[in-house]
Image 1 (cartoon, rainbow, N blue to C red):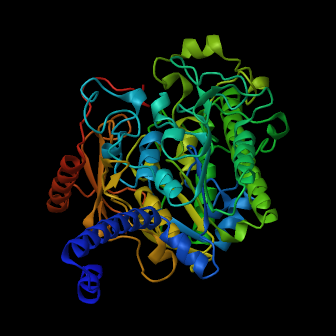
Image 2: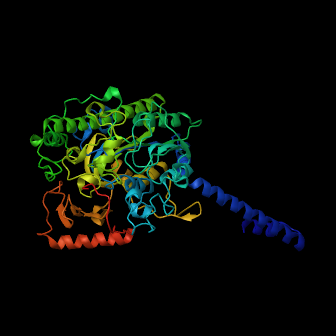
Image 3: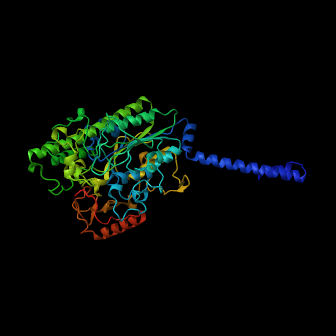
Length: 583
């Protein structure tokens, strides 16, 4: 319009010539505006980078470290006896959250982590391995990260970040579901839930062979492969491969300490004799340290023990049984010290490259410690394990052995919380959480503030200055349900999110809903009553005292809230038999 007015007012030309010129200039103006719009759209996702560069700053790198099936109290920073100096130093320099929540199992947590929304919306309403017939084909039960969501890696990549991953994927094993299709520039991944930690590409249980891919292409492992070392080396090599100064997002998805329990020979006897007093003694010891550290309050009590079938009195066991059980915990502890060692190598590498100080680091476990005996996995039996494993005592922890810590040590690993992985009680869904790096004003603090795994994606997007879109690559995508943690990290707010709005869970028919300090749970048999229970976590964080009989009004209120949540996210409760840990 402005060009037209200027031309009309100031150019003294014949009308036909003037009309022609005006038309040409309007066309040029429209073309210019279109080009400007395209330029702005392309620039929008990297506006933070531009602003930071204008101020002489570089957007922070982001390092996300997720370990597999590690318990609440295993690391030193959360009261454990296991030697984890690098994790402990990260905690001392950063912030620990004691009330950080995930899903009770692997792939649902990972789907929420990368999408920022509920797993029932993101495609992992149930793990693919556990899907029941009535769930198959339902929306949200695709068994892989679906196209209703956009991966945070895709958004960071579009916003100017290098995006790297090494470790466990577990969000779809078909080529079209590969990390290379979900925003990772470089990725070396094991696609399924678990495998041998050595280079034999050995199945964890009876009905699958593990698949490894790098950048979307099938690869095989080198003979000297050990999971924690190899994945750390691979991530460092990706970071080193960058030829520019763009920031990076690195996702190190370690498979330790997930069973089978394996460590290199030099680590086999790191904890020899440490656990001969048994799991009850370990729980008491850890709780005392947790109180001293301030991880739990002084009046916290241990959760109730399991039924004797799953957690017999240590004194009642035979010497041989004690010896084997203690050995399994020794190996588990060694796996955790080993992964800490490799994290230390990664941190040192970043420091040597001048990247560490500008790297925001997250560390947590994908769920609580695992109670599953190997023979309880799908399509697996004790006979199969015996035929296909070398579980002689002298070989435990080495190639060919297949053992896990089992339910009693899992309870100790999750001290003082109730139960473990696969269950929606606190021991299944509350995990240790540490964050450190730029933007963290609460350094050295331990905070009892509720946060959820869906809060990670919006946090990463905020520090990168990237907005979550309503469409991505021409398709509509669901909004993020999580809340950015940065206002809390920086000290601007006292909470991450308003827990009075409530948060829900469901896995294999196990159900939970938390609102404020109250939480309801439905824990399936044999570890629960198979009915609703009510707990006040402020007074009873270890879920010892069921209030369902004395506060029925609150119970009914929260059951209705869970039903609303289930309807909102499309929960399909399983029908028929499910693969359970009580098998």
